Length: 202
Image (tube, rainbow, N blue to C red; front, side, top):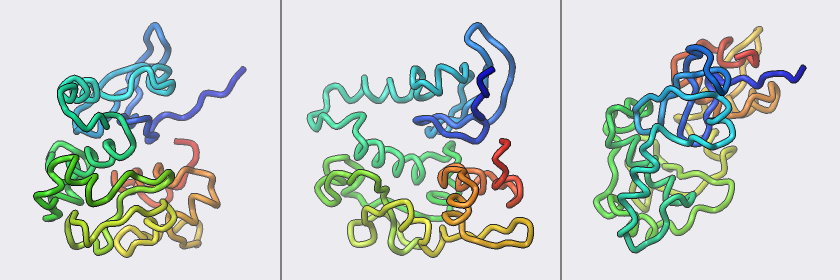
C-alpha cells in the first residue's frame, strides 16, 4: 500500500493546507489558506497535482490581466511581484502582520509590474526577492534577488530553533531533518512550537 504524503503545513502553488475536513469523491478534502488571504476547500489530490492552484484569485488575475501589455502573468517574476504586494497591502494575507502590518511599504514605482521589472529584471532561477535591511521597505536600493540559503541567513529571518537540546538556524534544520525550508519557515510564522515545526509527521 502506497504511503500518503503529508499535506498539513505544505504549500502547493498559492495554497497551504491548514486542516483536514473530510472525504470526497476524489479523496481527502482539506481547508487551504490561499496567498491572497482567502480560504478554499478542495481535495488534496487536485491541489497536489496542480489542477487547483489557488482559491480562484489566480484565474481572476489572469482574466483581469488579459488587456495588459507586459504579457508576464503567471511568470515567476510576476508571481513574486504579486506576493510582495499581497504581503504589504492585503490585511487578509497571513504574512501581512510581518510586512504591511509592521510598516513595510512598497515604493510608488513598484506598484506597477512594469516599474518593478525595470528595476529588478527577471527573477533568476532558484532566487527570491530579499530586502537587504529588513526594517526598510521594498525599493530598488534595498532589494536584491537572493537564493533561499542566502535569504535564510538574513538578520530578521535567521531564526534559531531548538529541539532535544540542539539549536540551529532553520536552514540547517531543513538539511538535517529533510523538511523543506519553506515548510519550516511557514510553520514558524504560524506560531508553531520549535518541536512541532521540526516534526516530519505533520
